[in-house]
Image 1 (cartoon, helix red, strand yellow):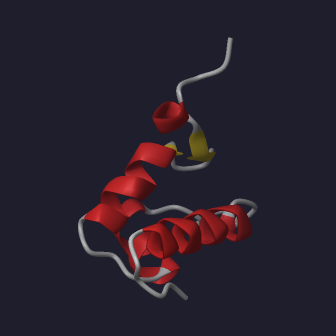
Image 2: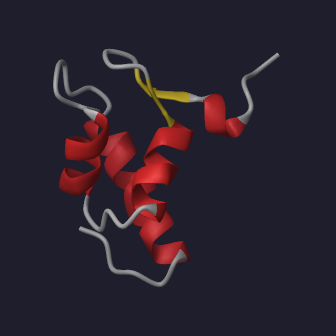
Length: 68
């Protein structure tokens, strides 16, 4: 059985979930770097960076913001 979407771990090194990413974007983060600063994602091995960057861009697009 898979985890609910919000519980999906996006950054294994820091235990950052999809819900954490969403919370950062909903809270005003407008770039991957801002999400990274708020959550700590991608600061160790960096294997998750491109996947999380894509999620951030998608969330920003859904909210009508640019991303980058």
